[in-house]
Image (cartoon, rainbow, N blue to C red):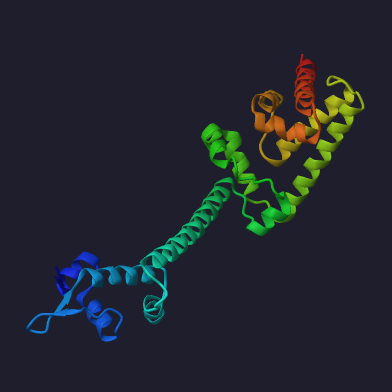
Length: 256
């Protein structure tokens, strides 16, 4: 069975002009001809055309493709393995590009306008955009969420470095107070809990004592937040939770 140049063009999704060009440069010269001299493509020609189009899709020049296909040591299985490897690597690169674009979109949604290098410098292996979509789903549209977006959109790399350093310092002092045996309702613990609330209030959004209570409950209910504080010091998530509630109780009592 053989095919005309028009049939092959339709099957392969290329133009007749392209097939003529491949013939002129010796890349794909069909074996058959009609009595009138028209090209006729065999199954072997179609297989070669498929290989050509694979390599073209992978970005190879026509001269390179000719050298690859005319290699006497490469059979169909060799070409398929080579193409499979190339396509797999291309998929991996594209997936990495998709991930990068998604991170950029998430960063834009959160208002974190840092380059990847700056984010790594500031946050290390902690990805601030990791829960951006979840945060938007849970709190998007709330005053606190919108206020946080507006504030963080203005922060520079130096601002974030200062914020991260202050947070790390506060965590160390919280852990030290707990290890010193300070009870969660002791004055030192209450003052640290209030400092914790104010750090949120001044950095992200207006954080009332009642809202602070809700955050404290989330520190125990959400294992990711629990793990964050447990990494600072075992038992800190529960201790901080109790201190925040005690501090809120103190604030409520002061208004009576």
